Image (tube, rainbow, N blue to C red; front, side):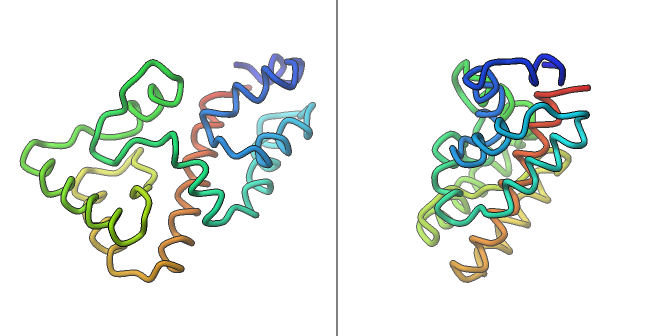
Length: 162
């Protein structure tokens, strides 16, 4: 959607454009309330500032819509389509290893592993997962929230264009 259309959309329509970026109601409300935006940079700055307050609770809320890394998102939702386009194809020889590491991560942290996959190779993703398994719950929450923020802003740049 172009910025002019986003600015003039109803609040409900604007939320639906943003929801696949991050389904966090306070963030959605803050970005929609900031309209109209003079340019996409202003929109992105507002979205980034609104994401600054995200925490582990925000992360848990948003992760309800994210597939596991290495698993192709299923379904026809916009979010599923975005996820399919962001994750690289995982080679068969890495799939089982990644699935095991995902299970270890979920057992330790109680949530799925989240990483901005776009632009990263399967090996890079696996290495990050292995590293993050060594972190404390608090350290990992900070990193995961940062990854959620990166994903949201990346998706926003694809959902609302000049």
